[in-house]
Length: 138
Image 1: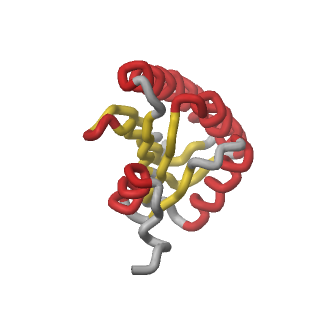
Image 2 (image 1 turned 60 degrees about the horizontal axis):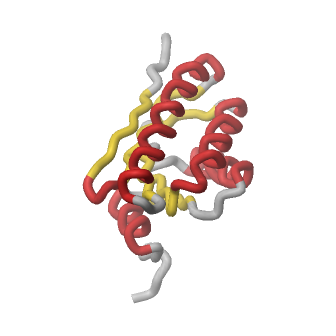
């Protein structure tokens, strides 16, 4: 049975780039991922040019099942390329194992402006404010 790969990119409210990564990102999905990455780069660069400033990225990974090592390297390359155009990137909905793999992508990309959250609301709040409300004491 073939596991469907879910990849999407759009611009949402507040000019936030919305990315979706789902399914089983194995080595067989690499071609789809590379095509998606081309779209992601274009959307982010166009948004950057439109706004005249770095953009925010929200990444929905709640349906992401697995990463393949090659895919990790590919995603890290995308993050490194987009660094000049992105102020902050927040992911949400990932399992513990996916969040651990995400830490590898962060390390490989050299980016320090990506953070993982449990919920979309937490992620959007951090994107807009730069403050992680889930760890602050009220």
